[in-house]
Structure formats: C-alpha cells, structure tokens
Image 1 (tube, rainbow, N blue to C red):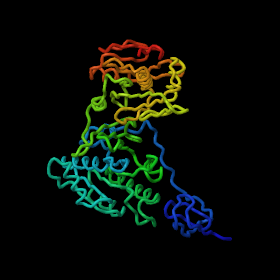
Image 2: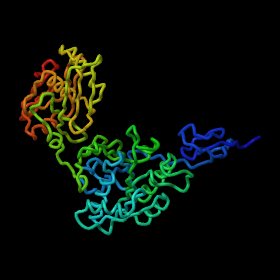
Image 3: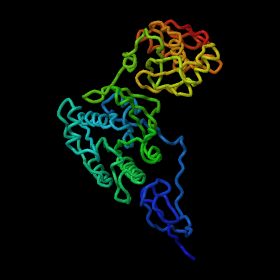
Image 4: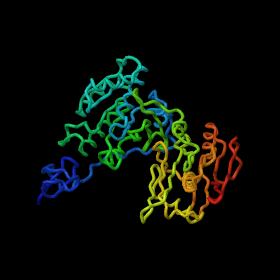
Length: 446
C-alpha cells in the first residue's frame, strides 16, 4: 500500500494541487507550484498531559501596564498607551503619513531615555534620518537605533539582543523569512514574518509596531489572518490633498475600537488636533443654504461636523444621489422619507451630500442633519446661525433618540451654539442651549 502521494504546493500562498500547473488556481501566481509529499498514513495522536483548568475566580486581575507614546492622540486611540508585548499593525495608503507618525513616536520615546529600534526595509538609514531630523526639535538621541535589514530572522535576533522599549518595522511587505521559499510581500511571507515577530513580542515583552500596505479595496494587503494575528489594528486615513489625518482603531484587544485621533499634516510632521470641532468648523459658511452642523461621537469624544447638501434640477431621466462621508443607501432612504412624509418633490432633483473634512459618519445620529441640509438647499433657505442638529430618522418620519445626548450638547455649548434640534427626551437636560425637541420630521422648521 502506498504510504504517501505526490502533491504540488504553491510557494506564494501554500495552496495544494493534485497535479502541476503553470499558474496557481488560488492566488494566480505563475511558476510557484513545486512538488511535495502528502502523508496519507493515519497517525494516532500522541498522549499528552491534560492542560490544567483554573477557575476564573482564582485568577487575579492586575492593571495592564502601558507606556505612553508621547503623543496624546495616539495614546487615546490605543486605549491609554502601548501595552508591553503587544503587536500593533498600522495600515494606510501610500503617502498618508504612516512613516511620519511612527518616526514621531520613535523620537518622543527616545527623548525620554527609552531605547527604540526603527527597522526599515524600504529606505536607507540616510533617508530615514532626513525625515527624523525634520520632525525632531533637537538632536536625535543615542537611544534611537536603526536597522536596515529585510531578513526576518536577523531582525528578531537583534530585538532579542537589544531588548528595546519599542520596535518599529516599516513595512511588513518588505520583510522575508529564509524559511519560506518565496519572494518578500507574498501571502506566505507576510504571514510567516508576522508570526515570528509575534513570538518575539510575547516572549520578550517588547511592543512591536508594523506597517502594512493597503489594497485597492482599502484593506491591509496580505491574508485576512494578518489582522487576526496582531493585537491592535490601526488605520491612518485622510485625503492626501488635504491637511488633516484621522487615526482609527479597527481592532484592539486592550481597549475600545471606537476611538479616533485627529492630526494636522504639516512640514514638521503630524500635529495633534486637541479640538477637532474647531478644525471641521473652521471652513464652514454658517449663512450658506444647504449646510447643517451635527454632533457625532467617536469613542469617548464628541465633535461637531458640518454637513453640506446641494440639490439641483436634473437634466437626465434618472436623478443622481451621491454622497461623500455618508452611506449612499442611507442617503437614498432619507430622500425617500422626505418625499413621502413631507411631500417634498425631490424626484426631479440631483442630490449631493458631503461631510466637511472627509470624515466618514456611520452612526444614524446624523440623519436629521442630512435631512435639514437637503431641505435647506432645496428651499434655498439657510438655517439659523448657531444651530446644531442631530437625531435618527425612521421610515415613518419619526425622530428617534440617540446615545450621548448630553455629551453632544456639551460640545456644542462649548463652541458657542445657541439652538439644538434634538429628539424628544425622556428627562430634562441641564444645558444653556435652547432645545427644540421634535418627535417627527414634520416639526423640523426650515
């Protein structure tokens, strides 16, 4: 009886095939299939000592120590700082500012006498130092070390030897392991190198930040398991043509996934924006028709964002519904509610909605502001000065309450807003803002 049968394994994605082919059917790579051996012999599982089961009541819960990055916005997104032994993945489009942010973190920690290793497989030491000198307000510390290496085993050995307070690998797509017979950046290499770095982080308690490229769809390049391997996944977003960047958390085993950090891109690097509301409201024309300011909550903070709408008579058979920062399906739903419940004839109108600043709003609290901006543009009548609007709009036209109402009103009051259109509240709210509580969208006075 045959104990083994030949198979062909792809060196790029580890897919298996019963016969050789010029192209892998899984990943589409050419010339990557090589012959291997599959063991068909059934092996009995070896006897093992049962793992001990410990009651949760006997497990002591201690506070997780964190190390501050020296940048308040980054600490807030991470949940209070970097956890020792954690593996953090930072993703973003090319040129968005990933290397700039990591360079500033490295400088801030090294200035506090914390040894930091910056490993780059894309740039030379001279190129990285030019960027570092632009960010640093003083000469670079001797505790900031550079490694120009693409071999994963050598990098891991250096981390075990130096034991830095933080290690940065820029980027994971340029690192390759000698154990995997494929080129750097392949799915198998990305996964293998991430696993090796994860082992180093857990065994030595060294926090490691790795950067990853993004695909055309906006996800981190490489297998989806890459995001499952790491402890925290951060995305740096923003329009490269504009001056601000948003740092968002997609996954965080040590904190909330709803936090957001706001930065301003300058020649000296990324500068923290302590009050995002002032940034988003700075370009607002309060007296323009089609503009409504809403209050959104991201994580533990609330800030105000203007929403702009433009309605114009369509010259085609099918009116356009386009949105930036608001889900297009949500926009279509709100337009249908306005047409049905208020009797507004929007069937012959092109409607364009934009969230100022490029922020993407996913919570339904912005529904009422979207409706208000559309009505304001359609009637060519601006809202009153100093008005903030928020609330969820249902299909029957009812305005439903949203969470964190007091936090939203407090932020609006701090910025000098006088009137707030909000859903009907079950209890009285203490605020200096004049509240206009509405139950149905018909009560929205524009």
